[in-house]
Image 1 (tube, rainbow, N blue to C red):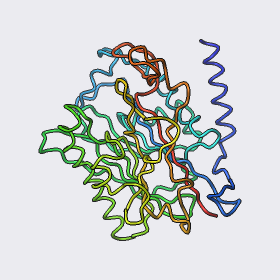
Image 2 (cartoon, rainbow, N blue to C red):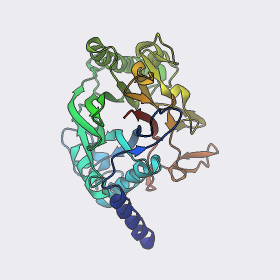
Image 3 (tube, one colour):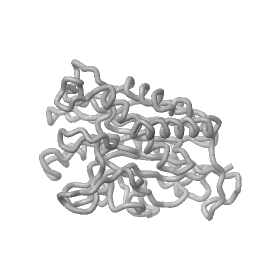
Length: 351
């Protein structure tokens, strides 16, 4: 095990050296008319309980403390960092993601430690994060390569569940310029869970959906051709009414404001498994402008890829097949990754 860790650290060091001056990777495909066009990877990942080891008196984080029920130690936190960075470094092959939306991170301290201790900071990654009112203290965040994406504005938007006497994650809005070519608007979401059942909990997700819609409508009011990406763990499948009607994100259709690329998912049967059933709760949705061939930035291929790296799975002895290799199996620490698979799209940035 010690030899493996030494080899892994050497590999990470080599990757950092190789990519320390990395900006973009040129390519030529049917989606590109110029050899100088650039492919940019966009990724979303629910990292499942990336907590620090310190108590926050304002949050219900006692479970993830060294003295808590999960015995969440510094060593286990560092292993979590290593695992998540391994996913980010491997998800796109040699093409590192330029932008990664994250959910279930506790705070800025965790994000800062994560970037520094894994070497991602040296690869040029920075983060955007705001504290949200979520009762457990888990937030959404964005990490990005600063040489490729210049952040010019960001803010959190509250999902108001006061009528339910409940608090949840904000929606993170980030505006930036991609490769000095065009503006990109990003919304990172983690909508309320299905606690209490899918139907009973759906009104809470409707509020989240309407909040996201208002943000998008305000952007489109000033620029009908705005490049918008809505990503997140929506706790809804792509074909539900909330996703198709409220967000207005169905199949590719010129009458829709948005296209849900998760409805054209490739790579695996789902992003999360409950008993026998796989669902696609993690999705990436784009505005119509990003499917326009004349745009400076466009989706390379109108699909979303579900990243299914072999090390993210383990055998499922109860329900058969495979299940996701999580950090805990119940309350038993197993040192895995997450209960969600990451998702990915490629953008073409024209020269």
